[in-house]
Length: 238
Image (cartoon, rainbow, N blue to C red; front, side):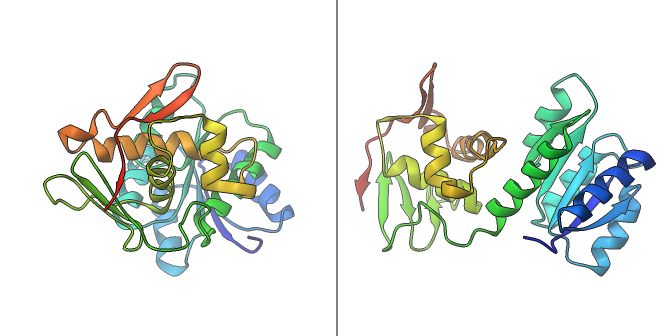
């Protein structure tokens, strides 16, 4: 995790310098960029492990840059916003940011979130990955853990990220049971989970959107008030 190259895209010179120095003290290799254009030049030259991205940038803003990154690259993004309104944070997560952090932020919280994202995206040994390949069917869907593939009832392939795959595996192996956030976090992140880790919330939102691409997927995962979430369908081994 140390020596990870982290791009700090922030137009405020004082904040950019503070974050760069903070990351350097923690053993990371930070690179400051004052605009999306500077970031693009950095990305052309080097492999970036994580982007700390400010929403308010001159020229192309952070939301636009995040959307463009998600369309072409898999580099994780920690979105930083100074606005009190939740809209920017929600939109940032919707378009693919891995986490968000409102300004002003505690430096220790920034480092905790950076480490959580890096652990999550670099963890090759998924906690919920079964030891042997299995196929599950539910309401016409087919989930193959060996091929890491999901087919909707019409036979269309639904592409899943690693986090979404882990989350769906947790649900299909514990169907029709209320699962709380801590359980899902433990099964998908294990010992890598930290107090500031919001990965379950982010991944669940994305997984639900992908399932809802087919009408039958709209009701597969339900929220239980005060309890957590439940995968409502009966699951069978295929």
